[in-house]
Image 1 (cartoon, rainbow, N blue to C red):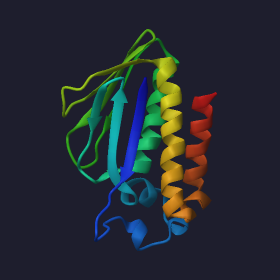
Image 2: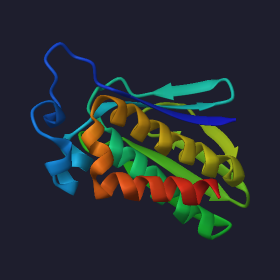
Image 3: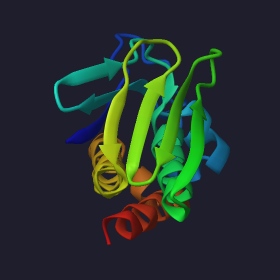
Image 4: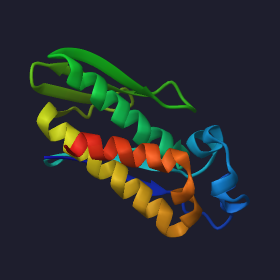
Length: 158
């Protein structure tokens, strides 16, 4: 079983622009890169990996996971990477047949799942991230980016 997690950065002096500006009036770039920093995690069975940085742009990570999953779904053998914005670290996704290997460059973690497990896990993550952020910043749900994320989540769950 694979599960992706994300949590917003919790600080007494919030650093994300979403605390000073309305999400509904933000640009796509601001929503993807400047709003909603936090940490992400990956659990595959009993193995667990997590960032502990507080600056991973959660919406960008979620949307990137959807794009990676869609690219991996196209052929029986493919590669895709997520590159973190503030470091040289990346998460590598390698598909061979039905097996997908996930390995962050910053750690010895290696998660192995099937493409059939990856698709709904990414879908659940997209729904959860948007729901968690929307519970705190409801105007995010009014944006075209939120609609795009929901559309991708639904297509991955189909």
